[in-house]
Image 1 (cartoon, rainbow, N blue to C red):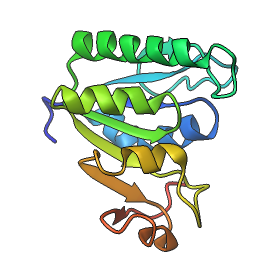
Image 2 (cartoon, rainbow, N blue to C red):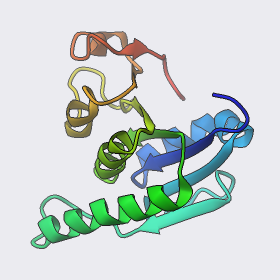
Image 3 (cartoon, helix red, strand yellow):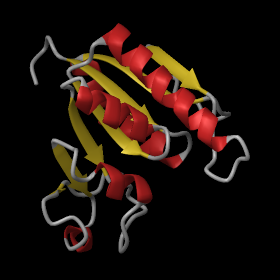
Length: 155
């Protein structure tokens, strides 16, 4: 990456958002923006430009139409911003941005959650084969993701 690159940080609210905020050095170095969910948990000092999308849950009755809408919204945001990289710590909100980003030729960097010590996340399993760089934070996770890179703990 060089100074001209643009980075989209994508994370669901809560712990995933807190984890991605540990990449502040990258965020400050590049033209960056954040895509996350509307919630009470807010990062004031990470990315000036933010896209706040509605929180969703796979157990919601209207999950499927909302998930389709999320793919449409991901397409709109990525076409507008034209990032060179999507960096994500997951979870559900990340998947459409990884899929659409990959289809648009954007490099996808996925960081498996710090909470995943022994077993892979659903989003991690779905994104693993499309990610340009897949990182884990625990050595034991290299068994689940053999082509991944051990990045160490973000905290």
